Image (cartoon, rainbow, N blue to C red):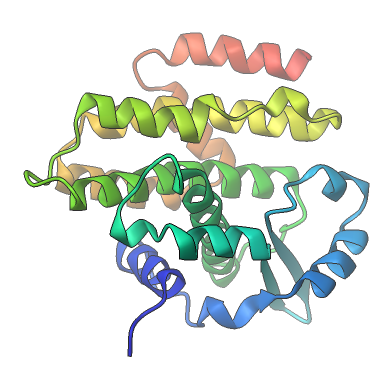
Length: 242
């Protein structure tokens, strides 16, 4: 039986970090349920992408997860399957697809490790930062797979960074908190992935596993301690002021 793109990505993350213990595909929800949960999530949810969303709720010491993908997004990935090649036609859809799986997986892992403040801003920022970092690494694997040398060029990395980081428009959020969240996490993720690019395979694996174990303040401190972190820190302060 052929594996789905979803299951392949979940297994990739689990091999990298830890087993989540459930099949996240069982958490997929339809458009109607997404609309219901969006209403319960409050007014800020109106500003989030309608292409895909991940919903989290803790009750009776259990974590409930709902993952939604729009029909349009799935059709794009079916029409331009990234397993057959990555291009301008499917990279944005793949980014969105991977990030939602990542949100669900890391939320579940953190919950298993005792995290219960899933409604906190730090929890949300930690998931967003982690997703951007992990998605960048997944994109590198996709690009490398289709290179005869299995090596990713500088041009490839610039292309990936453009779509993952530069094309984001956090300034478009009307909600101040959402705007600050995405501005900060995008800056941090972009900076951190430059550092990851400087490491060999084993060192990179050890680094991202340590990074995942940190809470948001720890992740942020780790990135700001890297070369160039002083500039990033000043930018972060400006974001908070705005």
